Length: 550
Image (cartoon, rainbow, N blue to C red; front, side):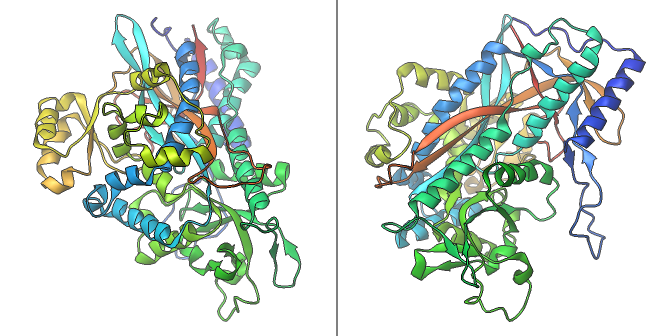
Protein backbone atom coordinates (compact mmCIF):
# COMPACT_ATOMS: atom_id res chain seq x y z
CA UNK A 1 0.00 0.00 0.00
CA UNK A 2 1.54 3.36 -1.01
CA UNK A 3 2.06 6.10 1.53
CA UNK A 4 -0.46 8.99 1.46
CA UNK A 5 0.37 12.26 -0.33
CA UNK A 6 2.26 14.40 2.15
CA UNK A 7 2.31 16.95 3.73
CA UNK A 8 -1.09 18.66 3.82
CA UNK A 9 -1.10 22.01 2.06
CA UNK A 10 -0.56 25.16 4.11
CA UNK A 11 -1.06 28.83 3.46
CA UNK A 12 1.92 31.07 4.09
CA UNK A 13 0.30 32.35 7.28
CA UNK A 14 -0.30 28.79 8.52
CA UNK A 15 3.29 27.81 7.73
CA UNK A 16 4.60 30.79 9.67
CA UNK A 17 2.34 30.02 12.64
CA UNK A 18 3.39 26.37 12.76
CA UNK A 19 7.05 27.34 12.50
CA UNK A 20 6.72 29.88 15.29
CA UNK A 21 4.94 27.43 17.58
CA UNK A 22 7.40 24.63 16.75
CA UNK A 23 10.62 26.60 17.20
CA UNK A 24 9.53 28.15 20.49
CA UNK A 25 8.48 24.71 21.76
CA UNK A 26 11.87 23.31 20.74
CA UNK A 27 13.72 26.09 22.56
CA UNK A 28 11.54 25.74 25.65
CA UNK A 29 11.86 21.94 25.83
CA UNK A 30 15.58 21.37 25.24
CA UNK A 31 15.22 20.19 21.66
CA UNK A 32 18.61 21.79 21.13
CA UNK A 33 22.19 21.54 19.90
CA UNK A 34 25.09 23.65 21.07
CA UNK A 35 26.57 25.80 18.29
CA UNK A 36 29.73 24.50 16.58
CA UNK A 37 32.87 24.91 18.66
CA UNK A 38 35.05 27.84 17.67
CA UNK A 39 38.71 26.88 17.41
CA UNK A 40 39.63 30.57 17.44
CA UNK A 41 38.42 31.03 21.01
CA UNK A 42 41.50 31.13 23.24
CA UNK A 43 39.56 30.88 26.49
CA UNK A 44 36.29 29.02 25.84
CA UNK A 45 33.78 29.21 28.63
CA UNK A 46 33.04 25.90 30.37
CA UNK A 47 29.37 26.94 30.50
CA UNK A 48 27.35 27.16 27.26
CA UNK A 49 26.25 30.68 26.42
CA UNK A 50 23.85 29.88 23.58
CA UNK A 51 22.10 27.04 21.78
CA UNK A 52 20.26 26.42 18.51
CA UNK A 53 17.12 24.39 18.14
CA UNK A 54 17.81 20.97 16.67
CA UNK A 55 16.71 20.42 13.06
CA UNK A 56 13.24 18.87 12.86
CA UNK A 57 10.40 18.01 10.50
CA UNK A 58 7.38 20.28 10.83
CA UNK A 59 4.90 17.42 10.32
CA UNK A 60 5.24 13.85 11.61
CA UNK A 61 6.04 11.62 8.64
CA UNK A 62 3.74 8.74 7.58
CA UNK A 63 5.11 5.27 8.31
CA UNK A 64 3.27 1.95 7.77
CA UNK A 65 1.90 0.80 11.11
CA UNK A 66 2.50 -2.91 10.53
CA UNK A 67 6.14 -2.31 9.58
CA UNK A 68 6.71 -0.09 12.61
CA UNK A 69 5.29 -2.81 14.87
CA UNK A 70 7.37 -5.43 13.05
CA UNK A 71 10.56 -3.44 13.72
CA UNK A 72 9.67 -3.28 17.41
CA UNK A 73 9.14 -7.04 17.46
CA UNK A 74 12.52 -7.68 15.82
CA UNK A 75 14.27 -5.57 18.45
CA UNK A 76 13.67 -8.15 21.17
CA UNK A 77 15.35 -10.79 19.01
CA UNK A 78 18.28 -8.50 18.26
CA UNK A 79 18.75 -7.76 21.97
CA UNK A 80 19.41 -11.43 22.66
CA UNK A 81 21.32 -12.08 19.43
CA UNK A 82 23.94 -9.45 20.18
CA UNK A 83 24.38 -10.52 23.80
CA UNK A 84 25.15 -14.00 22.49
CA UNK A 85 27.59 -12.69 19.89
CA UNK A 86 29.39 -10.61 22.53
CA UNK A 87 29.63 -13.72 24.73
CA UNK A 88 31.33 -15.87 22.07
CA UNK A 89 35.02 -15.05 22.38
CA UNK A 90 36.17 -17.58 19.77
CA UNK A 91 33.71 -16.23 17.20
CA UNK A 92 34.80 -12.63 17.76
CA UNK A 93 38.49 -13.57 17.78
CA UNK A 94 38.12 -15.30 14.41
CA UNK A 95 36.77 -12.06 12.93
CA UNK A 96 38.66 -9.26 14.71
CA UNK A 97 42.00 -10.75 15.73
CA UNK A 98 44.97 -8.46 15.05
CA UNK A 99 46.85 -11.59 13.99
CA UNK A 100 44.54 -13.13 11.39
CA UNK A 101 41.30 -11.11 11.38
CA UNK A 102 39.96 -7.63 10.72
CA UNK A 103 42.36 -6.16 13.27
CA UNK A 104 45.24 -6.99 10.96
CA UNK A 105 44.02 -4.54 8.30
CA UNK A 106 42.20 -1.99 10.49
CA UNK A 107 44.46 -0.51 13.14
CA UNK A 108 41.61 0.93 15.22
CA UNK A 109 39.82 -2.42 15.38
CA UNK A 110 43.11 -4.18 16.04
CA UNK A 111 43.98 -1.92 18.96
CA UNK A 112 40.58 -2.44 20.59
CA UNK A 113 40.88 -6.20 20.10
CA UNK A 114 44.36 -6.27 21.68
CA UNK A 115 43.05 -4.36 24.72
CA UNK A 116 40.21 -6.87 25.03
CA UNK A 117 42.65 -9.78 24.66
CA UNK A 118 44.97 -8.40 27.36
CA UNK A 119 42.06 -7.91 29.76
CA UNK A 120 40.85 -11.46 29.14
CA UNK A 121 44.35 -12.82 29.74
CA UNK A 122 44.45 -11.02 33.08
CA UNK A 123 40.92 -12.19 33.86
CA UNK A 124 37.61 -10.40 33.43
CA UNK A 125 36.51 -9.42 36.91
CA UNK A 126 33.01 -8.12 36.13
CA UNK A 127 30.67 -10.71 34.57
CA UNK A 128 27.77 -8.26 34.21
CA UNK A 129 27.54 -6.24 31.01
CA UNK A 130 25.07 -3.69 29.67
CA UNK A 131 24.08 -3.08 26.09
CA UNK A 132 21.96 -0.15 24.91
CA UNK A 133 21.09 -0.82 21.28
CA UNK A 134 19.52 0.85 18.29
CA UNK A 135 18.62 -0.98 15.09
CA UNK A 136 18.20 1.34 12.09
CA UNK A 137 15.91 0.63 9.13
CA UNK A 138 14.74 2.21 5.89
CA UNK A 139 11.53 1.44 4.07
CA UNK A 140 12.30 -0.61 0.97
CA UNK A 141 10.14 -0.51 -2.16
CA UNK A 142 9.63 -4.09 -3.29
CA UNK A 143 7.66 -2.97 -6.33
CA UNK A 144 3.97 -3.30 -7.04
CA UNK A 145 3.12 -1.05 -4.10
CA UNK A 146 4.65 -3.45 -1.55
CA UNK A 147 7.04 -2.17 1.11
CA UNK A 148 9.26 -3.87 3.69
CA UNK A 149 11.82 -2.65 6.20
CA UNK A 150 15.53 -3.25 5.60
CA UNK A 151 18.22 -2.86 8.22
CA UNK A 152 20.84 -0.17 7.66
CA UNK A 153 22.97 -0.99 10.71
CA UNK A 154 22.89 -2.17 14.31
CA UNK A 155 24.39 0.17 16.92
CA UNK A 156 25.95 -1.18 20.12
CA UNK A 157 27.83 1.92 21.34
CA UNK A 158 26.66 5.51 21.90
CA UNK A 159 23.19 4.78 20.52
CA UNK A 160 22.17 8.41 20.60
CA UNK A 161 19.18 10.73 20.11
CA UNK A 162 16.88 8.92 22.52
CA UNK A 163 16.06 12.03 24.55
CA UNK A 164 15.84 14.26 21.48
CA UNK A 165 13.55 11.81 19.68
CA UNK A 166 11.18 11.73 22.66
CA UNK A 167 11.21 15.55 22.71
CA UNK A 168 10.36 15.58 19.00
CA UNK A 169 7.37 13.35 19.68
CA UNK A 170 6.30 15.93 22.26
CA UNK A 171 6.73 18.73 19.72
CA UNK A 172 4.43 17.08 17.18
CA UNK A 173 1.85 16.24 19.83
CA UNK A 174 1.92 19.87 20.98
CA UNK A 175 1.47 21.19 17.43
CA UNK A 176 -1.47 18.83 16.94
CA UNK A 177 -3.08 19.92 20.22
CA UNK A 178 -2.35 23.60 19.62
CA UNK A 179 -3.26 24.01 15.94
CA UNK A 180 -4.75 20.65 14.90
CA UNK A 181 -2.46 21.22 11.93
CA UNK A 182 -5.28 23.39 10.57
CA UNK A 183 -7.36 20.27 9.89
CA UNK A 184 -5.17 19.45 6.91
CA UNK A 185 -5.49 15.65 7.10
CA UNK A 186 -7.87 13.10 8.63
CA UNK A 187 -4.97 10.85 9.65
CA UNK A 188 -3.32 13.60 11.71
CA UNK A 189 -4.64 12.57 15.12
CA UNK A 190 -3.03 11.66 18.41
CA UNK A 191 -3.97 7.98 18.20
CA UNK A 192 -1.83 7.65 15.07
CA UNK A 193 1.31 9.15 16.63
CA UNK A 194 3.65 6.35 17.68
CA UNK A 195 4.34 6.28 21.42
CA UNK A 196 7.92 7.24 22.17
CA UNK A 197 9.37 6.41 25.60
CA UNK A 198 13.02 6.14 24.58
CA UNK A 199 14.30 8.29 27.44
CA UNK A 200 12.47 6.10 29.95
CA UNK A 201 13.90 2.90 28.46
CA UNK A 202 17.51 4.08 28.24
CA UNK A 203 17.37 5.33 31.82
CA UNK A 204 15.82 2.04 32.95
CA UNK A 205 18.70 0.08 31.46
CA UNK A 206 21.24 2.24 33.27
CA UNK A 207 19.30 2.00 36.55
CA UNK A 208 19.02 -1.79 36.35
CA UNK A 209 22.77 -2.07 35.75
CA UNK A 210 23.57 0.35 38.60
CA UNK A 211 21.38 -1.58 41.02
CA UNK A 212 22.92 -4.88 39.92
CA UNK A 213 26.38 -3.47 40.66
CA UNK A 214 25.30 -2.45 44.15
CA UNK A 215 23.78 -5.88 44.80
CA UNK A 216 26.59 -7.93 43.28
CA UNK A 217 29.55 -5.99 44.71
CA UNK A 218 32.79 -7.87 45.00
CA UNK A 219 32.43 -11.62 44.69
CA UNK A 220 31.60 -13.03 48.09
CA UNK A 221 31.40 -9.62 49.72
CA UNK A 222 28.71 -7.31 50.96
CA UNK A 223 27.03 -4.85 48.58
CA UNK A 224 29.22 -2.08 47.23
CA UNK A 225 29.51 1.15 49.16
CA UNK A 226 32.55 3.35 48.68
CA UNK A 227 34.32 5.41 51.32
CA UNK A 228 35.29 9.05 50.90
CA UNK A 229 38.50 10.63 52.15
CA UNK A 230 36.83 11.77 55.36
CA UNK A 231 35.51 8.31 56.13
CA UNK A 232 31.88 8.93 55.18
CA UNK A 233 30.15 6.46 52.88
CA UNK A 234 29.57 7.51 49.28
CA UNK A 235 27.22 5.64 46.98
CA UNK A 236 28.76 4.78 43.58
CA UNK A 237 27.91 6.92 40.57
CA UNK A 238 27.42 6.31 36.85
CA UNK A 239 30.21 7.56 34.59
CA UNK A 240 29.34 9.16 31.23
CA UNK A 241 32.37 9.11 28.91
CA UNK A 242 31.83 12.02 26.52
CA UNK A 243 33.58 13.73 23.62
CA UNK A 244 35.31 17.12 23.80
CA UNK A 245 33.19 20.08 22.69
CA UNK A 246 30.06 17.91 22.69
CA UNK A 247 27.28 19.67 20.77
CA UNK A 248 24.72 16.97 21.53
CA UNK A 249 24.70 17.58 25.27
CA UNK A 250 20.92 18.12 25.32
CA UNK A 251 20.48 14.48 24.34
CA UNK A 252 22.65 13.44 27.30
CA UNK A 253 21.62 15.81 30.09
CA UNK A 254 17.98 14.58 30.26
CA UNK A 255 19.39 11.12 31.08
CA UNK A 256 21.38 12.64 33.93
CA UNK A 257 18.41 14.58 35.25
CA UNK A 258 16.13 11.53 35.17
CA UNK A 259 18.74 9.35 36.89
CA UNK A 260 19.15 11.84 39.72
CA UNK A 261 15.65 13.21 40.16
CA UNK A 262 13.72 9.95 39.71
CA UNK A 263 16.24 7.37 40.95
CA UNK A 264 18.68 9.26 43.18
CA UNK A 265 21.68 8.23 41.04
CA UNK A 266 24.40 10.80 40.42
CA UNK A 267 26.29 11.02 37.13
CA UNK A 268 29.95 11.92 36.60
CA UNK A 269 30.77 13.32 33.12
CA UNK A 270 34.36 12.97 31.89
CA UNK A 271 36.28 13.02 28.65
CA UNK A 272 38.80 10.25 28.04
CA UNK A 273 41.69 12.66 28.61
CA UNK A 274 40.19 13.69 31.96
CA UNK A 275 40.05 10.04 33.01
CA UNK A 276 43.83 9.76 33.00
CA UNK A 277 43.58 10.52 36.73
CA UNK A 278 41.09 7.70 37.34
CA UNK A 279 42.41 4.71 39.21
CA UNK A 280 41.63 1.10 39.95
CA UNK A 281 41.97 -0.21 43.48
CA UNK A 282 43.71 -3.56 43.01
CA UNK A 283 43.30 -4.41 46.69
CA UNK A 284 39.60 -3.66 46.48
CA UNK A 285 38.55 -5.95 43.65
CA UNK A 286 39.50 -3.54 40.85
CA UNK A 287 36.86 -1.02 41.75
CA UNK A 288 37.10 2.13 39.66
CA UNK A 289 37.44 5.56 41.26
CA UNK A 290 37.14 8.89 39.45
CA UNK A 291 38.29 12.02 41.22
CA UNK A 292 36.14 15.06 41.79
CA UNK A 293 36.56 17.48 38.92
CA UNK A 294 38.16 20.17 41.09
CA UNK A 295 40.95 17.77 42.05
CA UNK A 296 41.64 16.52 38.51
CA UNK A 297 43.62 19.62 37.59
CA UNK A 298 45.32 20.23 40.94
CA UNK A 299 48.95 19.29 41.43
CA UNK A 300 50.13 17.54 44.54
CA UNK A 301 46.86 15.83 45.45
CA UNK A 302 47.56 12.64 47.38
CA UNK A 303 45.41 9.94 45.78
CA UNK A 304 45.36 8.00 49.04
CA UNK A 305 43.65 10.97 50.67
CA UNK A 306 40.89 11.23 48.09
CA UNK A 307 39.85 8.18 46.10
CA UNK A 308 37.08 10.12 44.43
CA UNK A 309 33.79 8.60 43.34
CA UNK A 310 33.38 4.88 42.92
CA UNK A 311 31.87 4.07 39.52
CA UNK A 312 29.11 1.51 39.07
CA UNK A 313 28.42 1.78 35.32
CA UNK A 314 30.53 3.23 32.50
CA UNK A 315 28.25 4.59 29.78
CA UNK A 316 30.21 5.36 26.61
CA UNK A 317 28.98 8.29 24.54
CA UNK A 318 32.50 8.45 23.09
CA UNK A 319 35.15 5.93 22.16
CA UNK A 320 33.60 4.66 18.93
CA UNK A 321 35.84 6.45 16.42
CA UNK A 322 39.64 6.74 16.02
CA UNK A 323 39.46 10.50 16.57
CA UNK A 324 38.36 9.79 20.15
CA UNK A 325 41.85 8.33 20.73
CA UNK A 326 44.33 10.98 19.49
CA UNK A 327 47.19 9.57 21.60
CA UNK A 328 48.22 6.15 22.93
CA UNK A 329 47.32 7.44 26.40
CA UNK A 330 43.65 7.53 25.39
CA UNK A 331 43.77 3.81 24.54
CA UNK A 332 45.50 3.15 27.87
CA UNK A 333 42.62 4.91 29.60
CA UNK A 334 40.14 2.74 27.70
CA UNK A 335 42.09 -0.30 28.87
CA UNK A 336 41.94 0.90 32.47
CA UNK A 337 38.17 1.28 32.23
CA UNK A 338 37.84 -2.16 30.63
CA UNK A 339 39.89 -3.78 33.42
CA UNK A 340 37.74 -2.30 36.16
CA UNK A 341 34.89 -3.86 38.11
CA UNK A 342 32.44 -1.24 36.82
CA UNK A 343 29.77 -2.54 34.43
CA UNK A 344 30.64 -1.39 30.92
CA UNK A 345 28.05 -0.10 28.44
CA UNK A 346 29.34 -1.44 26.18
CA UNK A 347 32.36 -3.63 26.88
CA UNK A 348 34.79 -3.87 23.97
CA UNK A 349 33.39 -7.26 22.95
CA UNK A 350 29.94 -5.75 22.44
CA UNK A 351 31.39 -2.71 20.66
CA UNK A 352 33.14 -5.02 18.19
CA UNK A 353 29.96 -7.05 17.79
CA UNK A 354 28.24 -3.93 16.46
CA UNK A 355 30.60 -3.60 13.50
CA UNK A 356 29.55 -3.79 9.86
CA UNK A 357 31.70 -6.91 9.52
CA UNK A 358 29.42 -8.77 11.92
CA UNK A 359 26.41 -7.68 9.85
CA UNK A 360 28.00 -9.25 6.80
CA UNK A 361 29.05 -12.45 8.57
CA UNK A 362 25.59 -12.94 10.08
CA UNK A 363 24.12 -12.98 6.58
CA UNK A 364 26.25 -15.99 5.62
CA UNK A 365 24.38 -19.32 5.57
CA UNK A 366 23.91 -20.87 8.99
CA UNK A 367 25.57 -18.17 11.09
CA UNK A 368 22.61 -16.37 12.65
CA UNK A 369 20.92 -19.77 13.02
CA UNK A 370 23.87 -20.95 15.12
CA UNK A 371 23.21 -18.18 17.62
CA UNK A 372 19.42 -18.19 17.73
CA UNK A 373 18.56 -21.84 17.12
CA UNK A 374 21.43 -23.15 19.26
CA UNK A 375 22.89 -25.27 16.47
CA UNK A 376 26.54 -26.12 17.25
CA UNK A 377 28.15 -24.35 14.29
CA UNK A 378 30.20 -21.26 15.26
CA UNK A 379 28.59 -21.14 18.68
CA UNK A 380 30.10 -24.07 20.58
CA UNK A 381 31.77 -22.00 23.32
CA UNK A 382 28.96 -19.47 23.43
CA UNK A 383 26.41 -22.22 24.04
CA UNK A 384 28.33 -23.25 27.15
CA UNK A 385 28.27 -19.66 28.39
CA UNK A 386 24.82 -18.55 27.44
CA UNK A 387 23.10 -20.28 30.33
CA UNK A 388 24.25 -17.29 32.37
CA UNK A 389 23.06 -14.72 29.85
CA UNK A 390 19.64 -13.36 28.93
CA UNK A 391 19.87 -15.82 26.09
CA UNK A 392 18.15 -18.91 27.47
CA UNK A 393 15.26 -18.37 25.08
CA UNK A 394 15.29 -20.59 22.00
CA UNK A 395 13.95 -18.81 18.95
CA UNK A 396 12.06 -20.34 16.07
CA UNK A 397 12.93 -20.78 12.42
CA UNK A 398 10.28 -18.16 11.70
CA UNK A 399 12.12 -15.66 13.93
CA UNK A 400 15.31 -16.24 11.97
CA UNK A 401 13.50 -15.93 8.65
CA UNK A 402 12.03 -12.59 9.72
CA UNK A 403 15.48 -11.30 10.66
CA UNK A 404 16.98 -12.42 7.37
CA UNK A 405 14.10 -10.85 5.45
CA UNK A 406 15.08 -7.48 6.91
CA UNK A 407 18.63 -7.64 5.50
CA UNK A 408 19.93 -6.45 2.17
CA UNK A 409 22.66 -8.38 0.37
CA UNK A 410 25.92 -7.68 2.20
CA UNK A 411 29.42 -9.13 1.91
CA UNK A 412 33.09 -8.47 2.70
CA UNK A 413 35.51 -7.11 0.10
CA UNK A 414 38.10 -9.75 0.93
CA UNK A 415 38.26 -11.63 -2.38
CA UNK A 416 38.88 -10.65 -6.02
CA UNK A 417 35.41 -11.96 -6.90
CA UNK A 418 33.83 -9.62 -4.34
CA UNK A 419 35.65 -6.64 -5.86
CA UNK A 420 34.60 -7.58 -9.40
CA UNK A 421 31.02 -8.12 -8.29
CA UNK A 422 30.89 -4.73 -6.58
CA UNK A 423 32.41 -2.83 -9.49
CA UNK A 424 29.96 -4.39 -11.94
CA UNK A 425 27.00 -3.19 -9.83
CA UNK A 426 28.48 -0.10 -8.18
CA UNK A 427 25.51 2.18 -8.94
CA UNK A 428 23.39 -0.07 -6.74
CA UNK A 429 25.90 -0.43 -3.89
CA UNK A 430 27.32 1.34 -0.84
CA UNK A 431 30.67 0.63 0.82
CA UNK A 432 30.89 0.76 4.62
CA UNK A 433 33.94 0.79 6.92
CA UNK A 434 34.10 -0.41 10.53
CA UNK A 435 33.21 3.06 11.81
CA UNK A 436 30.34 4.78 13.60
CA UNK A 437 29.15 8.36 13.57
CA UNK A 438 27.99 9.05 10.01
CA UNK A 439 29.72 10.44 6.95
CA UNK A 440 32.04 7.45 6.43
CA UNK A 441 30.32 5.55 3.61
CA UNK A 442 31.10 5.55 -0.12
CA UNK A 443 28.20 5.48 -2.59
CA UNK A 444 27.47 4.58 -6.20
CA UNK A 445 29.57 6.49 -8.74
CA UNK A 446 32.31 7.18 -6.19
CA UNK A 447 32.98 3.47 -5.60
CA UNK A 448 35.26 2.60 -8.59
CA UNK A 449 37.78 5.39 -7.99
CA UNK A 450 37.69 4.77 -4.25
CA UNK A 451 38.46 1.06 -4.61
CA UNK A 452 41.21 1.85 -7.09
CA UNK A 453 42.91 3.95 -4.40
CA UNK A 454 42.91 1.12 -1.83
CA UNK A 455 45.46 -1.65 -1.72
CA UNK A 456 44.34 -5.26 -1.38
CA UNK A 457 44.70 -5.36 2.40
CA UNK A 458 42.85 -2.08 2.94
CA UNK A 459 39.89 -3.38 0.95
CA UNK A 460 39.42 -6.19 3.45
CA UNK A 461 38.35 -3.63 6.06
CA UNK A 462 35.31 -2.63 3.98
CA UNK A 463 31.84 -4.12 3.50
CA UNK A 464 29.67 -3.87 0.39
CA UNK A 465 25.90 -3.59 0.79
CA UNK A 466 23.17 -3.36 -1.81
CA UNK A 467 21.35 -0.04 -1.61
CA UNK A 468 17.89 0.11 -0.11
CA UNK A 469 15.29 1.53 -2.52
CA UNK A 470 13.23 3.93 -0.43
CA UNK A 471 9.69 4.75 -1.64
CA UNK A 472 9.28 8.11 -3.35
CA UNK A 473 6.55 10.71 -3.20
CA UNK A 474 6.65 11.73 0.47
CA UNK A 475 7.57 15.32 1.25
CA UNK A 476 7.92 17.31 4.45
CA UNK A 477 8.90 20.73 5.69
CA UNK A 478 12.44 20.63 7.12
CA UNK A 479 13.15 23.28 9.75
CA UNK A 480 16.79 24.17 10.52
CA UNK A 481 17.98 26.93 12.80
CA UNK A 482 18.85 30.15 11.01
CA UNK A 483 17.66 28.91 7.61
CA UNK A 484 14.45 29.13 5.65
CA UNK A 485 12.11 26.16 5.83
CA UNK A 486 12.57 23.69 3.00
CA UNK A 487 9.79 21.62 1.44
CA UNK A 488 11.70 18.56 0.28
CA UNK A 489 11.17 15.08 -1.06
CA UNK A 490 12.24 12.96 1.87
CA UNK A 491 13.12 9.50 3.11
CA UNK A 492 12.91 8.51 6.79
CA UNK A 493 15.16 6.17 8.76
CA UNK A 494 13.62 4.38 11.74
CA UNK A 495 15.75 3.37 14.71
CA UNK A 496 14.29 1.08 17.40
CA UNK A 497 15.86 1.02 20.87
CA UNK A 498 16.49 -1.84 23.25
CA UNK A 499 18.75 -2.76 26.13
CA UNK A 500 20.04 -5.87 27.87
CA UNK A 501 21.81 -6.66 31.14
CA UNK A 502 23.66 -9.91 30.59
CA UNK A 503 26.74 -11.90 31.56
CA UNK A 504 29.59 -13.14 29.41
CA UNK A 505 30.13 -16.26 31.52
CA UNK A 506 28.13 -18.67 33.61
CA UNK A 507 28.30 -16.89 36.96
CA UNK A 508 26.57 -17.42 40.27
CA UNK A 509 24.64 -14.23 40.95
CA UNK A 510 22.45 -13.20 43.88
CA UNK A 511 18.81 -14.09 43.29
CA UNK A 512 17.95 -10.38 43.49
CA UNK A 513 19.83 -9.71 40.24
CA UNK A 514 17.66 -10.42 37.24
CA UNK A 515 19.33 -10.65 33.85
CA UNK A 516 16.91 -9.04 31.46
CA UNK A 517 16.29 -7.22 28.20
CA UNK A 518 13.60 -4.85 26.99
CA UNK A 519 12.78 -2.78 23.95
CA UNK A 520 10.94 0.49 23.62
CA UNK A 521 11.16 3.88 22.04
CA UNK A 522 12.37 4.90 18.63
CA UNK A 523 14.22 7.51 16.61
CA UNK A 524 12.98 8.77 13.25
CA UNK A 525 15.43 10.76 11.14
CA UNK A 526 14.23 12.35 7.93
CA UNK A 527 16.43 13.67 5.13
CA UNK A 528 16.18 14.89 1.58
CA UNK A 529 16.21 12.08 -0.97
CA UNK A 530 19.37 13.52 -2.52
CA UNK A 531 21.35 12.79 0.67
CA UNK A 532 22.93 9.36 1.07
CA UNK A 533 24.05 9.75 4.69
CA UNK A 534 21.64 10.06 7.61
CA UNK A 535 23.47 11.45 10.64
CA UNK A 536 21.94 14.18 12.80
CA UNK A 537 25.15 15.49 14.30
CA UNK A 538 26.76 15.51 10.85
CA UNK A 539 23.91 17.65 9.49
CA UNK A 540 22.36 15.25 7.01
CA UNK A 541 19.02 14.60 8.74
CA UNK A 542 16.34 16.25 10.86
CA UNK A 543 14.49 14.82 13.85
CA UNK A 544 11.03 13.47 13.15
CA UNK A 545 8.31 11.25 14.58
CA UNK A 546 6.20 8.51 13.05
CA UNK A 547 2.59 9.00 11.99
CA UNK A 548 1.34 5.43 11.74
CA UNK A 549 -0.84 4.67 8.73
CA UNK A 550 -2.74 1.52 7.75
